[in-house]
Length: 423
Image (cartoon, rainbow, N blue to C red; front, side, top):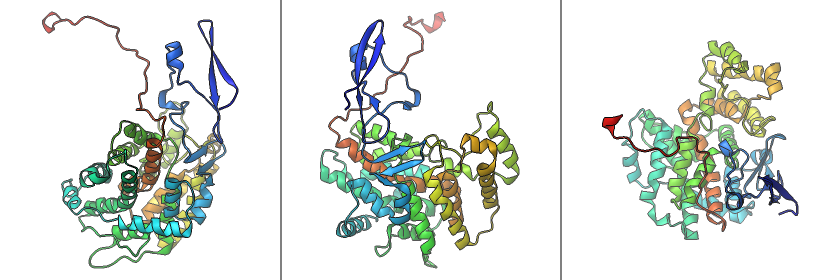
């Protein structure tokens, strides 16, 4: 907290509100007592000027293109770390020692299998169900299978639930994928890394095992790292809001998955590649038309007003993957053409509509063989680590309260009911 105050004058009365300082980033005005002292609320659609919590997890400076996890730049983590190490960092607050990492990795590995009855539950979905709808249902149902880790007042149960969610998400995501193909489920193997295990569960079949290419494993690991957490975005805020009511962690993560599914959030990487080549000129023209609400998915970012720092990492990785896979697909021609337009067209450069992380991760996932409707599932898999870390932070916060946004009511004032025969 700083010594400076924000002065607010209402009806001639001057009121002082404290200004709070974070470790980095904009200062904030503490308006917790605003309604009590004035009878007024603030009006902030989308909560874009409202801090709903304090957090030590992730910091973003969109103007400078900065993303830090516990203080570490995302570029350093993506290039030098692993997803499991980043998971430990987000959950525990510090990078692990070798001994701590070995123990953590072993714990996650031993939790990757899911209750066998979950397979029967999953088979209740239609084969053509979107994998995200399957994930919403199956993750929410985990509380029915693992009710020994749903007591949020017990730190040990919270820890077990956290480990289970991080460990089982790749298995559930792979099961959703296999089910959509009509192929048998593949069980996890304890001798593989977190990411290699996931790739094998997706692409192995009983007739032929899948040998994980190190380049693809590293590319997928980077995708997981780059999507692990992103401050108080819509899905993370949903997890926190659900958790503020005391809901169990499995239900909270399922709520986050439901929010992530939207095309304005996690579904952007799916929408980015669903563009026919012949429609590119029309899409570009619509994107430039200020009177057209059309948005070109995969370009620009609500937070980053500079180049998305995650996209810089993914750009190089995309080229490596395409080279290794040797793919020849019109979808990549579309991607390359759009990339060149965005990087050199005066309108896109001026508006800073650079290709974002969704654009490049979509290219990589498609080259690996994932259909576009699986892209958001993989996003959810990676983001589960951040959601769980944010949920744990919220539960441990002594100032945590149940979320209750207010509104500016614009409907009818009180009126008397008229019986239906007199209307």
